[in-house]
Image (cartoon, rainbow, N blue to C red; front, side):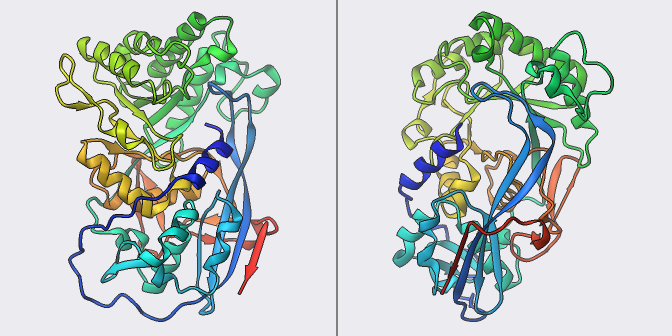
Length: 438
């Protein structure tokens, strides 16, 4: 979705405040010192994708550029916390002079939730609490994951969302493509497939890929778009083989004909698609139920995912929706919730994940073009029982040094660094957009 719309919605939304279950070390001391926030900077980290962002269902070609807006929160004790921040800059000012420990309620060294006196402030920060958790983790000498709760896994599954509509690239846009050696294929769907093969060879061993579908805006008819979507999925599956998992993202491109999402899913049933994301607006619950009914009646197990367009993910009323058709007794209507990581933050994400677990729904936060968002996800995924996977792409940011992570065999691991696990190379940061001092 459009990033600006998402940010406006995130700022306007309220944060439901509920306490986490008590940790095992209740009653132990969590404070190592008194901290005081004395400076806040918002400083862009320019980056570049290894491959350009081709069109998706709603946006045209966007090229190679990428930016992570780095929030830097410093204390008088010379500690600094960093995170990605897309929210309103004016929301950050009230942090000056505060002790970040006092912003949260604690069970020993684990955060239970926002402290009541500061609940409204944390709500308005729209995801900035990642930088606060980084700061606290460094003060306590512990990774953020250990501040969020007890770890339930050693590593987090990762998928790559770099497959767009490469079949729609123009000749000038194909110049210099990393995955195109020689002339382009005659069949344009093979452009997407070749990129899929290229992704298979990337470091980290990721073998789960998300493909953009929903080409109606760019074709002569909806039927032509549907046929191209089907052909692209088949081409990618042939290219990457049976050992790779495929996800599909419609970016609401099927909204004009929502039940065509069922036609598409049935036409690609032989390609073993794990999940379809955001095929049309979540408000079309009756249509989603009918799509799922047709899939389950045909024995297709593809999951339905959504939620990135709402602060905190899928609205609670839709989380409670059940599918009770043939073969789906008691199944949730939506199987995977995808709140945007960078505008949700940790405090809200913990609440969302617990609500989803009550409905037997997994969480897989949305993360577009942000490495800081990916690193933040990994910590949450280690402590969230109903975590599905984390989203990464081929963007690279020279200013970010993620020594706290390793990616191998398609999974992300922590190396033990305190806080987020990322340090900054100042020489690759742009001038600050915001510089507040106490």
